[in-house]
Image 1 (tube, rainbow, N blue to C red):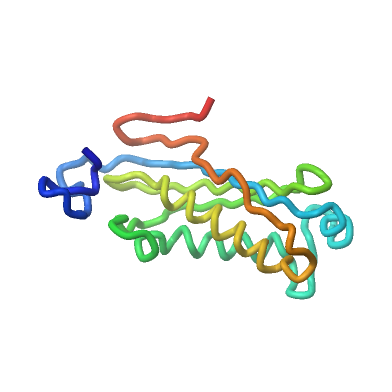
Image 2 (cartoon, one colour):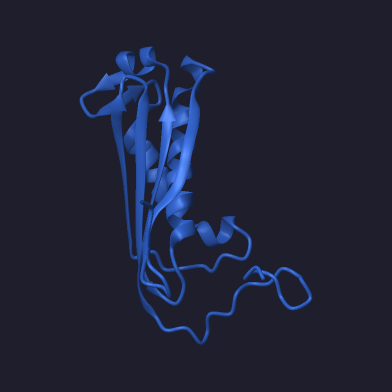
Length: 157
């Protein structure tokens, strides 16, 4: 049975009131393919600079804001106090940017959705800031890499 369905198969928020509060973390990752000329043209050290400003810095702020608002964006997600959120953006080849979002809280439920939302919105922001340069941009492989603090820890092999 899915956890977000009640006994009558109707959508319902999971009741976490009896759960124990623990420190919970999650790390998510996503990649953005940018055609090679974009990175070459816009690279300024470890960031990209476009007409709208510093691309990685803007994506990091947008992703952090989204992680903090996940409970408003994803139906049936619990609103959580995000106590830590770190997003990184790194150029890993002449056409690929890797984004990671790590989220931390002390609560009764995990922060996987917050980490995934943070990395997704950071990727969308990167797309938005570069879209005028090419329609070939792709957001790829958004996935959970690790979670800790619940019933069962998880780490992608």
